[in-house]
Length: 254
Image (tube, rainbow, N blue to C red; front, top):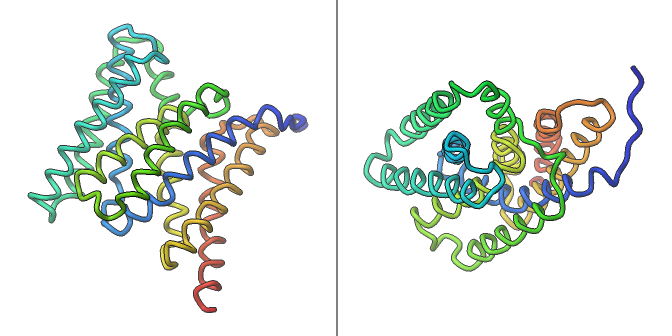
């Protein structure tokens, strides 16, 4: 089968939402690496998924405000609890984060057990549906991310532990419903890993750049090869990260 022709117009909004995700996830990813809580995003993303699944199980519209609020509430509550755990039991924080992810994932599976389309719904939340992004979704996520980026720029390290966890939870809740759990983790960690040795003023722009290149490549492959977009972008990010690390090493040597 020959590759499908590429229509850039179909990819404009998905690429725009990818750039928005990177705008928050690259700086947040650097902070996650610095704090040594690598799997926090997976746990918070899965908590947001649990909120979506619970709304679905209750018969609420998957794209409605009740579902958005349920996702945000479960993510914020879980993030607040994990912030408290880090303060009280810092030595076992990663174990608690991992346990939170497993429990939230298991509860999601149980809630969907009686739904004949449950597996498909859960798969969409994991892999994402970025190709279906439109102007409305981009506008909503841009407004939220604008506020979150302003808070990060204003407060910086003065956010404190709880403030960081809550901002993180809101960012992850918005992105996981657009791009899925897998791509949220990849967008947060892989660019940050590539530029981890650079100062923020250099690392963040370089992380954004390599992330943008990977999103463009993944979306192009998805459109031309009929591949799932989320996994294609994840693989593109995995390929771009070592190249970005090599560039970072050259920049550091100057």
